[in-house]
Length: 151
Image (tube, rainbow, N blue to C red; front, side, top):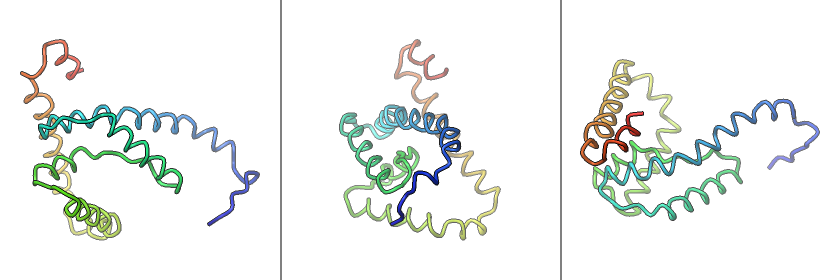
């Protein structure tokens, strides 16, 4: 544990970082109301937004207390987990272990993945999300709501 000496802090750098902190705060506030309903539509479930917001609040608070980054619900990982019938704590812990492994050893493994494959994967995910969000949702909304999706 390191003791913080406030007279050693570059307050000029802190004040320069305020716009970034504000944008990260705004991003944190809007990602749950956007991603959770989108995930619920993709998985045909009914979300409990209060429980989701409370869980994200606690996890961000705990992460911040230990100097960590904000959490973020990765929509694509959630959809893959759900579509592969991930259920229960055991499969959730397996995903946590796999994510930790990739976090630690991913940079070493990336040199063996051709760049064109990484680009193809990003293109595939982008096209899949576009089709799911724009094409498949066409009949689910009236014209005013759908124009909001397009914009």
